Length: 454
Image 1 (cartoon, rainbow, N blue to C red):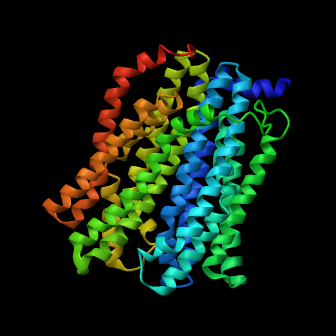
Image 2: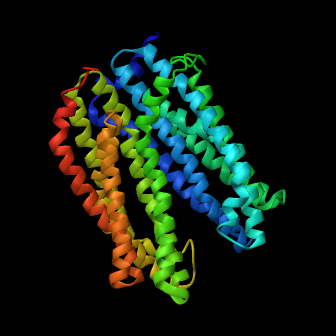
Image 3: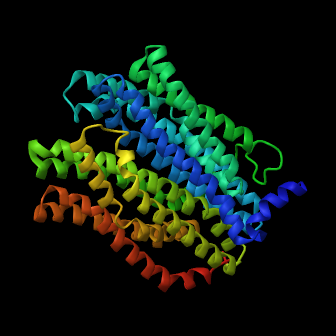
């Protein structure tokens, strides 16, 4: 292996922890922030067609988010195994883990191609009776489902780049797709008069471009991990899926939370206020994406550092790294807490010019963000345990927070009215971190005692 490759591989074990974490987390933060902003811009382009087009694409988001959940879960599993193997100097196992990522991408793409092709129409038919929305949505979801291989390859192998310390290239992969999508959207939607189908085509072309870029990078010189298209193992695939199940279920459950929130608001808000409150919740949830996606970039983007040093038996570096990650995550959420209360109104105006809706939406944002600073600890602890391969610890902590959300979501509106549903978010952001910090303090020493032993 060339000297340059060795230096790049070993930086997670020798570079000063603070400098290392900044170099790993900042590119991922930026790319995740761009992705969150892209989702907003994409919706704005589609909205220019008509309201039904925007509704159709919005109804398709759960399918897209489910694909992202599967790809992210697989990528996190690959990331953890490759990082830990490199820390253990077991390059052969790291190569096998990377190779098995390809077969998982293929299987995931085939699964969604079949599901969207067969059940795409049914998926929308149970949500709307409007023939135009039904037509728009079915075409959109079938295109993104049948051409999803690029998305899965992009998501999974971005994480592989992170595992080798190449977060800058991972960021470029995300930026390439996001910027290209923003450029292609108006061309396909308006210039070529393809409408909603044009938005879907622009999306899959952008994903394919990101896929091509990440593969070109992975097959370049100086890569410590080699992809050879072989050595597939069900046992290794099962390990990848086991580790990746936590981020998968977190993202998948977020979809259920959004759907449930809308149903609760409609039930308790009634015909008069239900639609208004749902609109406000949608805007607030969009702001929360600006909070949680970069926050997840900090915590998941630094998983490779924890896994590498855990595999190398360098427990002091693991503990130091976690302290820095806690600080970075808390600083980011504190900044967003302040921004929600100072420039939240500017964000709201991206979606509506109605003063009544704007006032209600701003109030919703301020409620949603009441406890986002403790959320920083929740994210780091869950992602940290996942990166160390401790899924049996990470998954229950994630479920506990989701459980606190659902309990609050059903109880608060029944007791205090529809608007009280907004407080389910800060309630879960308080009780979830309390449980996670308690488990972290009582179990992390035992986990670190296993470092380098497996």
